[in-house]
Each structure stands twice: as C-alpha cells, then as structure tokens.
Length: 216
Image (tube, rainbow, N blue to C red):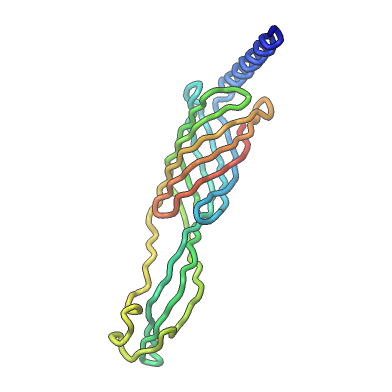
C-alpha cells in the first residue's frame, strides 16, 4: 500500500512539473508553428499538407492560422449528348463517362484550439473556418461518338441525346472543420501532433482528415 501511495505521489509530482514546464514554455514562446501531413478520405483517398501558426491567447486557448495543399476527388457521372458535323451536315450521338473530378486546393483558414490538459499527452480540440482556392479537371472515359447513330436533323435524335453537355461551374468554396488531437512531448520545445478532423468543403467534397506532424 505504501509503495502504491509513493508511486502515485511521484506520478502526480512529475505531471505537475511537466505542466509547469509547458506553461513556462508558453510564457516564454507565445508563438508556435506546426507542419502536418496525411490523408483525406471520402469515396477516394487523397493527400493533404498543412502549415500552421499559433498564438496563445489564454493558458488553454490558442488562435491559429493555416495554409495547406490538398487533393480531393469526387465521383463523376454518365453523359449523353450530341454534336453537329458541318462537313457531314448531320447530327451524331455522343456518350461518355466523367469518371471523377480532381480538385487541387489551397485552403487558408483561421481557427481556435482548446487544450483540455497539459500533460505528457496533451489532448485538444480545434475549430477552423476558411476559404478554398482550387482548380479542377475531369477525367473522361468510355467516349463513344455515333454510338446510337447519325441523324439528318436535331428533331430526329432520340430524346436521350437532345441534352447539352452539363456545364461545370466553378463556385466559391468555404471550409469548416472540427477536430480532435493530441500532442506528445518529444523534446523541450518539440511535440508530436496527431489529429483527426471532419471538414466540410462547400461545392467540393466533404472529407475525414487524418494528420500527423511536428509542433514547435
């Protein structure tokens, strides 16, 4: 029983020292930086990288600013349409599949990070709001011209092929993310950062994000 009490006292004492050292670090270095990399998952798996800057506001609350790069993918769809040949003076049927959309995004975000407790493992939660700068491209497959024949006039086309190709509009995209993570102390000012976040990317695709990196 005495050994258990003694070990418990040592454990609590060590945690108190670590917490005090952590707070001393914050007081001395109110700014921090992080570099993380990982994956986004939805219907597809893609990559993500983030650079973060932190400013301590109060003992358990940080403000954050981040910039990153991610690739996101979204399922495509089947297209039936038509084309007119000036040379042949007739209409042809066209069918193809948009296999998927590929988005290359640069998210810029502001957020808050709340620290639950400062120990050897330091759990936290985050909330971020931002804007996605992005470019996209489509991957078309199974492209068939004249699949269901050629016709002398538009009215003779089957109804299925009288549609115009869908227009892809590049709308603005905003990012909202909520996550949880933990820091693990590697050195006096270096921490391993492990994080999960669910992010909503308007007009793109929502993903689960898994990240690991270093915070100093």
